[in-house]
Length: 246
Image 1 (cartoon, rainbow, N blue to C red):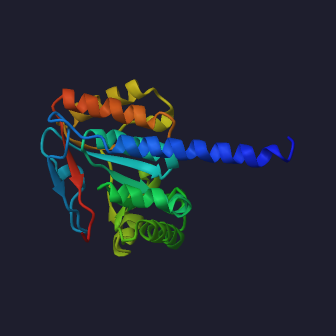
Image 2 (cartoon, rainbow, N blue to C red):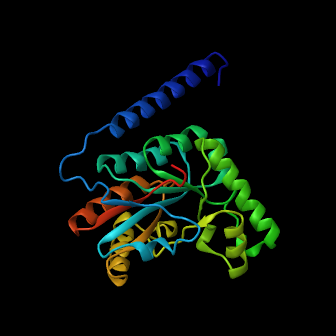
Image 3 (cartoon, helix red, strand yellow):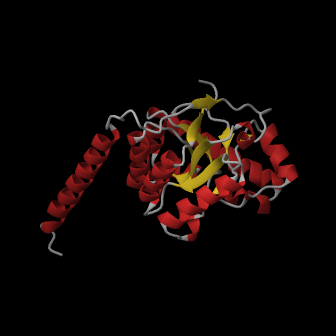
């Protein structure tokens, strides 16, 4: 490549990124109609709270997303939620939150709650106890720094823990937020199949549950859009987790 072309190509690429970002921000400002999914009520978790899905009534779901933030993919998921005036909880990896603090902070600014998901998505159950707790606290510190407020909400990578590790995490001041309905999007199945699995699992759990999805995948936004449409069609209501301390 000729040296003279490099600045032009960099400028063109940057302009393209700015244009994409502007389009995404504009989409997030879409006003919701009267049939928007919205939020039916909120829950504030404490260290003494039972698993959140036990606090849900029939027909209620809590939406959660793991493994972000991932620049435009996370923003696209947020835009789909915004179109329905609804809220979710994002469990962020510490190393990604440190790399993309602006995206992490924008999640909170959009009204969603934020928790941590370890520093680097290691399987904490496979680590020595002190290393596992240190990894979790490192992740929490990075996420808290990125969003500008402390967050005790926490989710184990792979939902993998042991009784000893869960107790150590609790003593470290973290609130373990587990799941009851897995969309299995991490397996690479289609958004349609993922949503169908979520609906089937909700039926198996008395039409209520804590739903697990991921925001950094290539089809995360489409999957989110299909899920929100299906939840409306099936008469579900969204319950949001409050950010502790607010």
